[in-house]
Length: 401
Image (cartoon, rainbow, N blue to C red; front, side, top):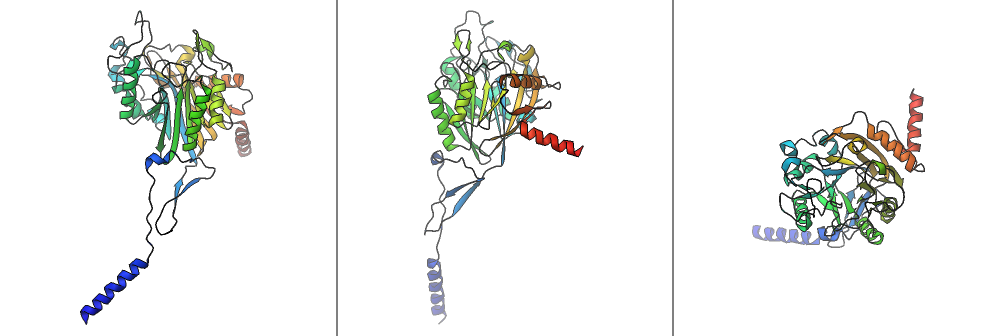
């Protein structure tokens, strides 16, 4: 009798379990994620998961309300070519210490890597006298300083990316990859996508130089940026373009020829990239700061100047001033505001906070002159806002006073 009861109880349990619907969520493999468009106009991204027994479960990816993206200009932390006298003391360990807390205080931090990462060797550009030629080869240990300071993504599209031929390009990519620093700009690595805190970013970099993704081929550039836009929440574009030096701080809205080389029409390029889907455009190349622009509610700065350049760069006057620009955007890249931290380099180099705020005054001057139609205000403290937002702020302060 007892055995019979046990059998009846077991049979009842089996019947109960089999009558229940069992659901299992299957996750999408990483290689399929790039085929999804995740840019939305609502603060969540919803994907319908595949489940068993017709039970539908929605997986919600929460999108951050506000993103912060920092951009800085040229970085060359010392070169061992033609010899070690152009390297900083203490292996460059302290070059970024005054600004590293600022660089780390963002969702994404970007910089332009001038030169190659290579301990020795490579195929150096022909140069009759290496002492007066500017070709850069930084030791591999330098890259750890960038990682420690908070950098996430680097441009390798510039006129020094090919200073040591293919060995230099390949080793630069290898070292950046080994430290988890995303990068783009070489023909062999035209773009990158990456996830940070649940947000997906696309990145592409362009230059007018051999071996880099061309700033001149607008059709191909648009195609690349459009593809990134289709799979990313926010697309960051970097370009190396424009004539060099303090005599070329203004944006002329035409092709710029410098030493016989076409350095591109950076105004048309930046606007075309935003038309194609870019959300932030960071420029560099002139070795001085250039103006700020807003187009279709997206942020552009045409040159971020010399940020951390040791020993072989002219740092006199405006060449030694640069902004750290922290851009605040919505979850889909629309400009909210930006904050400028002014830095200064004095020979031989390394960024320091400029408590006089000289580059902020320069940004005000250049932006008012070059883009008077753009409705932004750059406050003396370095906050960049739409003029209407500033008017509201001023009115509220007036009431409180």
